[in-house]
Length: 447
Image (cartoon, rainbow, N blue to C red; front, side, top):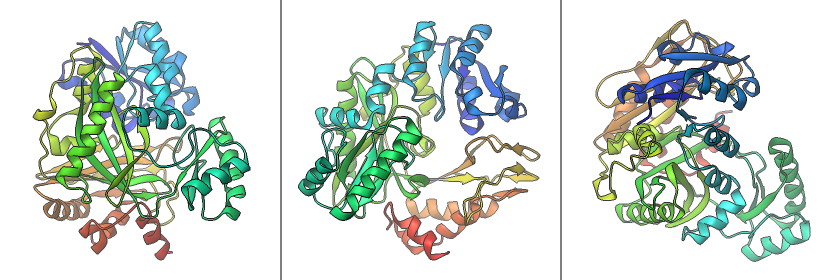
């Protein structure tokens, strides 16, 4: 087991990883920018190192400074959390060159799955069902028209690199295709420095289903069930739940088994999430995230397994602590991402939190790094906390969520709490009857 882990992140995920390390008896080091000097994870860590000014590129994305912090403090491993350098193959390679363990997959696996075109090819080779579309990048309009005609309209053009909805455009007819292709390429080039795009069939009313997987790097793989992340705004997840209201036990076992076998065949090490669009009983691979997900707590709630503990165990060479038959699913869990944003316009709302009170009681978990008097800086992601609720079934979970949302108090800034209080009372949400377009349509009605 590791002696000292450096946590290369900030906010609630840095605190989440720090807690896991403390439970395992591992010393902790956190890095931080000058804007985060008063952050809770900085206060609670055994050691902290300031690595630069507020801009991420000069601090949390500064590989040289993070490696230097490892060497100064004697950290023998780095946990990247999510975001920032968590899916940066170069970072993983550099740490390996310095004999520092990256708590995650190999740089090669990050590279393969980080390129969406190569990831799709790899998924197909591993037996994972994929969305019909181009075999590789599309550069010319003539080729785009040929592929679109073969798979049928509407189609979606996607950036090969990056994510977050940038470089994604839908063409409903051939007349739309030229503008969609050029716009997607332009956005991809500006956002990711790579204008490669590809084409896929655009599904009309799919759900977003993702399977949590783990590999030991030596040919063993397991899955921890699926999460339903269909409630999204501009391709950003807002509300996640496990298990999905749309799947039955047979479908869950089927797609989970496919993913676990694929991870084993790939020789993958650590945590990963294989994401699908699901429509009319069929699963279609869209991407794989080679890191811990923001929504991992709902999986922990229904399995009782600490996924960060598992990450650290696998990275240290201890292998997986469970076999597939050991993983049982208990009840239902929902996570709401609480952001420092206006609940109607979604404009960021940095500032000082004058009062912060979290809900409690059976089945309630709040992952957050903020506190009363904490000043939210304007430089980073607006996520300030996650409310995770677990119940014996979905009905109990929804009732508990309603109560927890009423107890949650954040004063001094605007947050998205009012949005979730509306959603929890909506009949479609109560019935689990929604798709990836539902939330944006709901929000448009309120404008």
